[in-house]
Amino acid sequence: MKLFFLVATSHLLLIAGCDQPVSAAAASLPWQKPYDQLVQKYVASTGVRYEDWHSSSKDLETLKMVVDAIGSFDLTGMEEQSRLAFYLDAYNAWILFRILEDYPTKGPGGGGAIGRTAFFRSKSIRVAGEKMSFNSLENDIIRKQFKEPRIHFALNCASASCPPLHSRAFSASDLNAALDSLTRAFVNTNPLGVARVSEKSITISKIFDWYKKDFLGRGNVLDFINAYRDQPFPKETEISHQDYLWTLNEAH
Image (cartoon, rainbow, N blue to C red; front, side, top):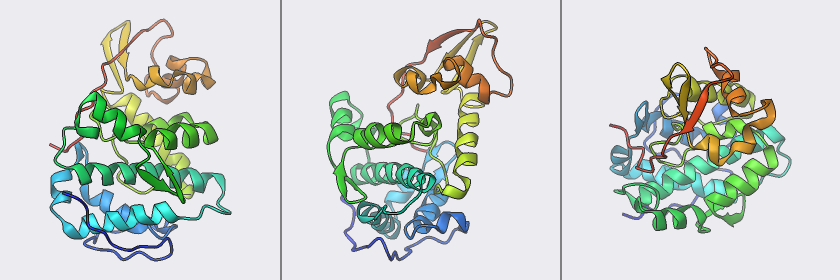
């Protein structure tokens, strides 16, 4: 089912079908308030309630307004933390839009490798006036411009092994705290982030392998993980990487 078309600008957004409370920080950009309400409504601890969201024409329309506004938003004059918060929300909102556009689906691009490659590499989204791909947004803009390793736990690719989608809009005022919280959760309580195999070995997300160079600022990958662990692992701990699950992160 294709999503409904509704005109929106970066200066005005109407809220359709959302009645959740919104923090003042989340309302700093005109489209953040409805986006914040949507993710509060549909993001659960076990994933995203895509079926319920897909059944609500009003909330589909609201998400369309959000991504339209993101597509035309003017970043001129925004300071670094505000720009990073914008790009993180832009990535996640567009992922949600594309998944709901294709729903029901087994995963990004239909679940297969060929479709998944097209999903992430085709120039199918618009952000701040520029047509681009998810791959470009993540690697050429977010990773390259900000050099912030914690973004890997804030971006959600709609897959089971991806760090859980944040249930709020990001904002500059609490971005550092949010990134810290998401990182700590992924390495402490999420077995798809870090899991102990034995006293001497652990398995960790493939994210730490694919983006290894992003985590070397503290020494090595284990040093990065230990910096956010409640109970750090010994330096001699053996590490292996988990298989990445590309199945849809649908709530169950």
